[in-house]
Image 1 (cartoon, rainbow, N blue to C red):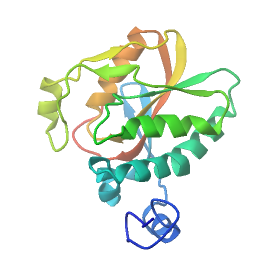
Image 2 (tube, rainbow, N blue to C red):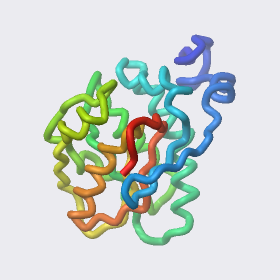
Image 3 (cartoon, rainbow, N blue to C red):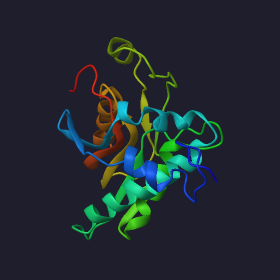
Length: 197
């Protein structure tokens, strides 16, 4: 295989050299309402890697990112709890043969016995794309999430990127209305733009 970033031969989707140069986490924490959102990277530093979700190679890239960052972080967090914590991905919509959010959710749960992925539980009825759209557009075109998962549980919300916070804010409201207690939301990247709630 070849490294997604530099093209050199390697075992993983991204070689160790590129991982060290491009993917050294700098944890960014934001608040969306009363929900803490934790991100590993500044979006603008890894935008090309995040945008791999629009290509078939994105499957390998997101699987690697989930194993390398989400799995270790969530396993360490879960050590403090004996109870079950569910990972709920925001709209695990399959495009180009895979769902980048499902990969983050699935492999993020692999590090600890008390973490369980809950796939396709939070689905958007409105499939509008927010990529490159303004805050005003996002606010006037809500995703209209429907939750069909377990109620009265503890969970962590999973997404790839937080930009304005509108998607996470809307998802949080729907989950709370269904008795889901969120510990926090976890994303790969934070693109600080617009406003937080």
